[in-house]
Image (cartoon, rainbow, N blue to C red; front, side, top):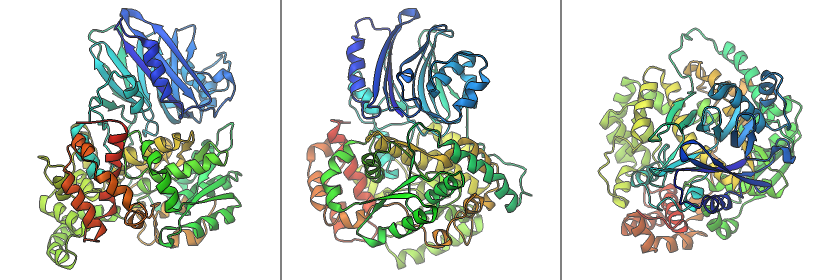
Length: 631
């Protein structure tokens, strides 16, 4: 895994090497083993700096050095990712001469031969910039699910910059350290900023399954954005598909995906919580003859601890198991550096930070995760809620129940969300957004007043129009799965996993998000994915090696830190200190007094105030102060 960046400019007065060196310095944690910069003089007075730092996973030799060029075509690439089927892609390219075993060289050769038409053949995760010498164009490309990040900003009429991290863009000092005001509302609502927005004004994210085409022969320069893949959730003629048929269809794809994700020239570990998703990855590896090292986080607070379940899986499959007990004192001593590792603020990345740290300290730099299992196999409780609320009769019953629920549990978050849904008759997307809210609308309005209504948290208009159209013609469960993949998974879980694992130079692989597996599941009816008596039944039954029954008979536990306890106790002084910083509140445009009242209400156990309200503000304030941002 690596870090990539670049500057494309027509400005003759710019000190390109100085800017490139500034960007390079912010990317070394993503690739501490090698680095390089190349400067290209192009047609039309354009100059291009390509920057790269390398974490060596495939072909550890110097032959995999980047930026990598192709002399015959004059093309260059900086690449972050892994293409797991690169050997098969290479074989299809015919009698070409290769000098390395790296997938980077395969991707470059494929692009030189076929241009963007090579993308459908690549199976993996990637974000890359390619200067195509024959087509005289710069291409910025992101993988289908958005596992690897890529950010872009137009600095002025003659300059564009791009990078794996937003902090890298800020480091070149061509971008103002200004916050995106719309993004603040979305962040407080969801706990993460929805793409293509970012927390920084003017900076956009390349979307999953998209590439930007800069034709350097055109004036003025404006990228053409091309979507080359979308999850194929469409109205299929699959009403007759039976469950047993779906299991048999899924099993070989699942087995192949996990096997492909073992391609590496260094050892591969697994993040193991003891839940269904990570246990399924271990089971599939065992069927493939692989016995990985597994890593788990332990808590002293037993209600949050899954050590018994993780140990059971490790023992069952004979893994070498490593445990890290995470006491609040460790969090307290490292909370500053953990939040500083955020490229964009989030409420959910600290856990990945610490388990990645443990993996790296154990000498492992590649680990697999079970991310994607809940989104694809209907693992969240909201899947049932969405299915019920999609039906007019159950929505009618919910409307009748709301007054009773308000009297029984005044201020409860679930009740307020349900009331907002039945009151406003929202679309599927708005219903989903309300269910996924982290901070209730009335609290958001108190700390950060705006003109937004309460039909749903704010999202980019292009995202709303696209997703509204795509979920309209499919069954409710598949619609909710698409929304989870597109929003919660893409904007929070994958982004957090990338930024927090790369803070420790660890590559995280997500075999349950292999695009062939996603396509297979997208073409199945939603009714087969929601097990009424067994969560994620389809995943469990499709595994080539069975899981111990205790794994799927126990109640679902999310991988959540004991924030509810820690914030009121060991971390209380940290929060109080941050919430007393008037300068940062002013820089954000957030009402300090309202935030303090929220914090006091949380400490006093007032109904309906959750740790996520506090954590979202804490991380945002700390990130803004650390990065010297303002509105």
